[in-house]
Length: 391
Ligand code: GDP
Ligand code: MN
Image (tube, rainbow, N blue to C red; front, top):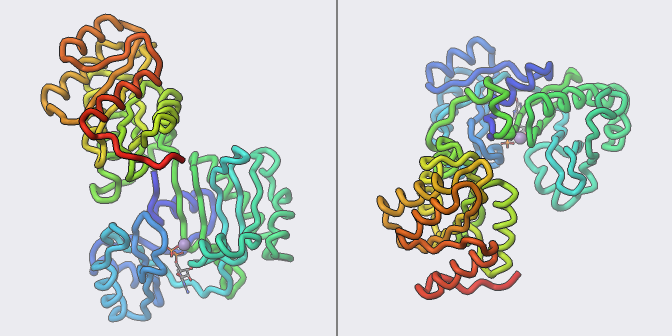
């Protein structure tokens, strides 16, 4: 779950990382009141989930109420990417002397969280990463070894800082690491981390992505409001249905439903291996008929999907229950796409019988490869299997 800047700043603040004074406004009057409380000059910041607001003119400054009204009106008419701006964070304007970048994200290579710091922070950090990557100092985090600020000093020194700022940044990074683990983030980023004209450090921006699977342990975060427009509608529907769905690539034409995340990933690999392109990952979790039906509906309406492969093993899950879900969707939607089911395990005979009654192609004792080939033939017969360049 991605967080808005103002939500992320609340988490930072709870970990004693200094953030600017500020509040979110949803109306011009509220903005005026907030600015009066904070004191001018203020900065107005569009609250959207994507980055690049600075470059999209989503950040404005105001010296007085008149400028504030103008800036507020301009921002509230702005759409950044596909996100219309509906909330604006009003904050004290910092007197920036230096903008640093600091962030933590999961590094697939070391399979650890990777701590990053750069003196070249600010809106051009992507360009720095592409053109001058040596200016971003990185180190995988071993949670225990790095849990003391003095362990962070060498890394901060390598970034080019020295003296008092180096010690201050090391102290702050230690808090950021604790924040990252405490809230079970996948990504936590402060860009820019500002050094102001009094030498004080402040987190001027906050970008968090929290592990969805851990949200139940963080009711404060789970309760953050999300409007209809901010999330991929399919991912939103899947979340409401209790299944984990990830939209993959736009060229995908095979919808995947699996019972178990590992099987889902193996199925995706196998689909590629057979010349297909998966449109999504979907793990049913504990599969009731309702959840299976919701999963199939979501996958069927994912744009580009011309065939669906349901690949499940009935361990705790019951094959008859899953079959009931599949059938309810086929009866109500009468989908045009080809659907193949491979499932066995708990109540497999009942499940198979239900699907056979509806002439749904099934694989009983064969492999995942057999299932994909069956689907491929059905799709090729309908001219539904596009030519894909082998990768
Ligand atoms: P992003 O572009 O979406 O990452 O938005 P940021 O919150 O990082 O803001 C972009 C840029 O606006 C920063 O790099 C700063 O240069 C500037 N900025 C943001 N807040 C302030 C502030 O309080 N004072 C000043 N002077 N500049 C700010
Ligand atoms: Mn930023």
